[in-house]
Each structure stands twice: as C-alpha cells, then as structure tokens.
Amino acid sequence: MARIVRASLLLTTLGAVALALPLNTAVAANSGGAAPTSVSPAGSGSTGGAAPGEVPPRAPAPKATSARTGGAVPGSKPPVKARPKAAKPVAAAPTTPAPLTSAGVFPVSGPYSFGGRDARFGAARAGHIHQGQDVIAASGTPIVAPLSGTILWKADQPAGAGIYLIEHASDGRDYAFMHIKRGTTRVTVGDAVRAGEQLAQVGETGDATGPHLHFEMWVGGWGTTTGRPIDPLPQLKRWAGL
Ligand SMILES: [Zn+2]
Image (spheres, helix red, strand yellow):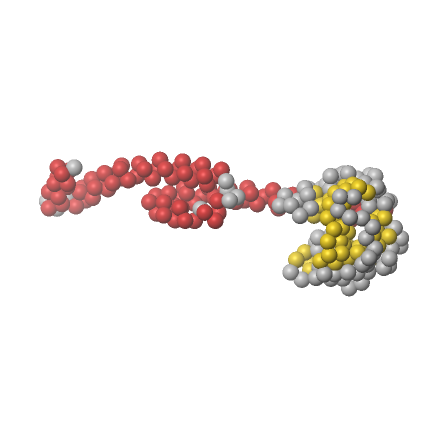
C-alpha cells in the first residue's frame, strides 16, 4: 500500500497526473466498487423486486445512499418497472366482466326505476365515486335478498349509508343494501336468509335525497383490502328479466 502511494505520489510529482488518478480510482473502484456491486444487485434485486408493494416507503432511503455510489441507475429502474406491475392488476380488474348469476330475485319488491346518470355505478359524488346502483322506489317497498346467504353486517352510518345491511350470498359475492327505512330491518348479523326473503324496507336514512335502495355488489369480500365493488346494473337487469 505504502509503495503504491509513494509510486503514485512520484508519478504526480513527475507531472503524470493523468496516470496517477486512474491508479487511485482503480484501487478505489476495486475495493469500494466490489462491495456496492455485490450488495446492491443482491439487495435491490431481491428486496426491491420481491416486495415492490411494500418497498416504496422504504426504498428511497437506502437507495438514495447506495444510489450515489453507483447503484443509481440500476437501483432506481427496477422499482419503476415493479410499480406498474403492481398497479396493473388493480387498474385492469374493474374492466374484467364478472359472470352474471342467472338465478336470483330482484332486490326491490315493487315498482322501481334505475334513475338517471347520477344513480349509476361510478357516478361522481362529493369526495368519492358512487359504488353502487340506486334503485328508486317508494318508502316502505320491501327489500328482499336476491340470493340465499348470510347477513354479514348491519350498521347505521348517519352521514352516509344510513341504516344498511351486507349479505354474503351463495354466489360468493357480498351485497349491500343501504338507506334502509328506520325500524324495518328484519334480520341481524349471522342470520341465514333465503332468496326472496324480506330483509327490510326502502327508506332514505343517511345521506339520501329521497327514498331509494343503494345497492352494491362486491367481489373478493366486502370491506376487505382485496375486495371491490363492481357495477351491479347488469346483474340487476338479469334478475329483473330485462
Ligand atoms: Zn347510491
């Protein structure tokens, strides 16, 4: 080491600066470069690529430091590729058509309408997107279970859904019935229900401008991180015989 330093010093004093720098950087690159290259590919390759979903919050810190040593380009690229991969299924999922159920009963037992654009799934709402289809009907019209199943949840959300029920149905989907008329709920959590069985009555509890059933259809589990609501109108039309 001492000899090499002396040699490079001699070279620099001789005016061979261009030769001395390559020597020093070559030594530094071998000792310092070997560690980063063996660590960063293994580190950014396995941790950065294996868990892209949970990495983003952690990634910036280690990569900012190791990135400057030489992993900047290769280290920053994988996460960029990984993110679209993670985002794609979420974006593509809503467009995948869900098979309709041929059996079942229309959930409102009485005169109804599907309303206008504002009643549709995906319509804009203040601060969110409409996650269901509104079925406009007179207050007191029976709400019935479209399929057999189990009552999964019952609650009152005064600022939103009002009084609502969630049914886990025999088709594996979860169905939400919202804005239920106060005092009309006939079932509670854990109850088994038959297709066509009355659950409650149409009302306007919660954030509603008039009596209607806000109806949601969920795949993957209502209220879970993997579950999501899908447009229930095609299924509603099927049950209605339209
Ligand atoms: Zn609604």
